[in-house]
Length: 115
Image 1 (cartoon, rainbow, N blue to C red):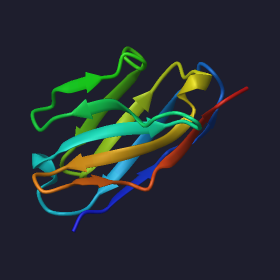
Image 2 (image 1 turned 90 degrees about the vertical axis):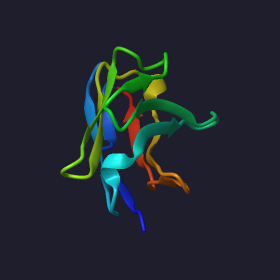
Image 3 (image 1 turned 90 degrees about the horizontal axis):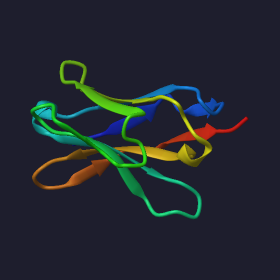
């Protein structure tokens, strides 16, 4: 069984930073592809960052240069460092763990960027 729990969301002013964490359970974490996605009110869900088993990363154009995804296999945790936050970054952020059989999602954490 796999369980993902996000944390670190909250209210931040434009230009500020937040670091999201997603703690995972289950065997074989190091062999999974991890991602962060977000869904803003009235918008489609958008995958913003992905990190593969070899550490290679990919970012959506909307966050490239501002967000950074990383993983700590020993801690079974994936992080999303978000810098220079903008109001349009406001969304519920979800982490995803992709395995051969299924994609597992966390419950989400709210990020609100507002003055």
